[in-house]
Image (cartoon, rainbow, N blue to C red; front, side, top):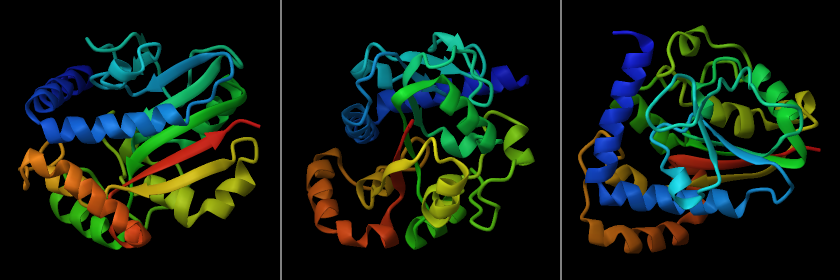
Length: 246
């Protein structure tokens, strides 16, 4: 099977899971609202990279959807390492479950700095590796999760396929090595780095694991998560990161 066919087949399975799992839909729609609240209001395009099944656009219809291969769900083919957009045309780059798939983060940061208008933003939602989630990802998740990997180096394993990744990449770059990130890319400073998803996400089963709680418990779980927010460094499964183009 070609990589393009493998990606499309993966997205078809994900689309079916989205339709069948109301708890997952509620989680992602809440995360989309967090993203939308942080989008820059400067003039320019809002481009979602690695749009997958393009559910973000259901809540933000003006988003330009892209993926690394042609798929039935997206508008354009775009590689985050080599964006085919003009200088300064973008107000926002949105990456939902995408940053940890990037094989060459330095090239992405260079491209983001080029295509974003001054005041434009990169908004990322991605896996976060707390002590709890790191153990769970390593035990139960099919994607590689390696906190010992260099934060900023190219990743040949991730380059091998659009579906390959290191789920620890975002934690390494924006949390563990944040000072080094700031030194290397002063034009794209971190303006927010927030840990999310301590209970509802792992109990939802996400797209592939069994759901462990009834749908009716979603709101109570979110209230408990809010109360547990001081423990997010120990318990979080996801994170929200915002960069702003100076």
